[in-house]
Length: 267
Image (cartoon, rainbow, N blue to C red; front, side):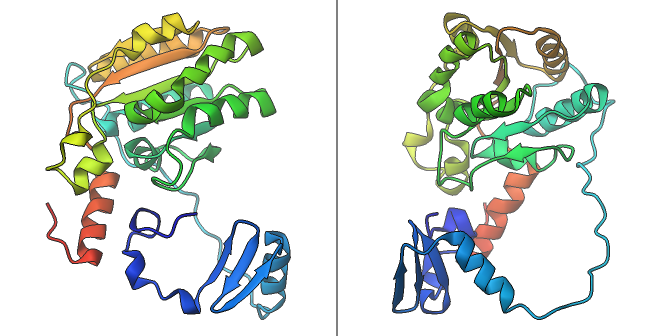
């Protein structure tokens, strides 16, 4: 865990670590006191023992996904919110599937997907997590996962899909290909390092032993997802061509909140 604004949605300077319990790297730090080699489980058990008994909390209603406009123009350019809606339509038709998400807008749009098993890192602490995590899900459980990953993270670890055929794994990988570090662009639009160039990930999928599908519109997204789900034995990669600057509503809300907390002017 990294003490940073992208983990806590507020500058680390606003966190007084003298009054925090830090369980990092196999040790616990409380103020000036350091306890090496203290297992996290032991810390949690000790804290729970100090929690006073309380009446049962009222039942919390099951989370629901964000509403989708299924009558929207199928020829319209695909947006991150459309990915969440397309996944929801798939899950409602075929049943729950585990999801492994990387960081960035794919993680924020995952918040608008129907409740299902989801593994993900925290914001930008571990970019490149999604594809290896998805392979791990199928290796450990035997269940076919959906993998959500941005183009920047895929450039780091997406090549691990080359091992899928050897082990009989066939995840469905959705690449948010916006040719940029879009979440970084949201905070630093003036920085040229956000531009990545448009890579042809669909062509890469064939070279790695899978099938690639280029997606540019909402209708193409639904069709590609259905085709991918119906195809077993080879990983399926949807190269979703998003325009730079296209962001999910959830990411936009996060960016605005961080800027308010940090005193910056919302863009």
